[in-house]
Length: 119
Image (cartoon, rainbow, N blue to C red; front, side, top):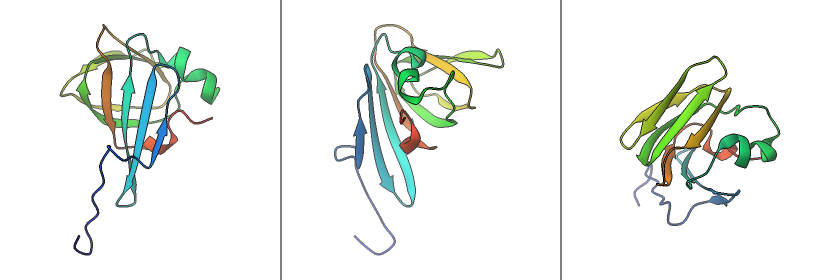
């Protein structure tokens, strides 16, 4: 590669975490962390991630892209919504989320991916 160019692939992530119903793959590139999150049907933040991080709601800010599946998010301020394939989302800290339907949700995360689901 030429100087100033760095290329990595999710086929060889720098870090992988696998809580129940969850796969988090993190690639560190260009001074950033990019994550591919896969949530299986039945996944719910408050059931699968809350016991690990020990907070009442998800306290990570998210910026990402939905590759496949559908995710429902409820924020502690009362707002809620769903995102599906092709959507780009921004979610502030203070929320719960879960997979809608029978298809796994695959997300590409660009904000604090390396912090997600760590105790």
